[in-house]
Length: 92
Image 1: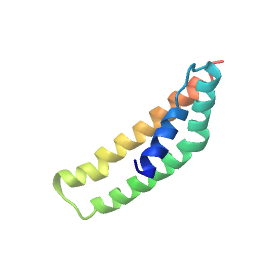
Image 2: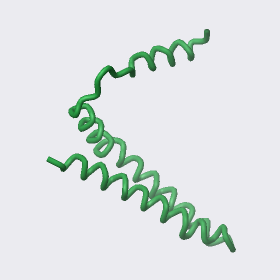
Image 3: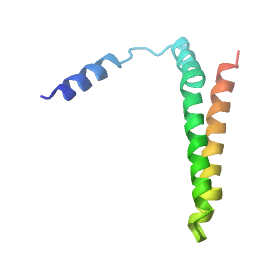
């Protein structure tokens, strides 16, 4: 076996949860919202800015895709994730 498979197997064995508690779910949701989500939002914004800029030199479907479709999908997806996590944390 390679070192990668040893590492992978060790990682997977450590990620086995016998019981998932409410506290674990809340802590994970808060980590996602406070730590991971800002980086995702920043990356999504940068991606949208770049494809909107590229759309200026495109035509037809590619222009519509880059100027409208992809930015809407990304922004709505990020909005939905953020709101769902926020609401799940504020249910108390």
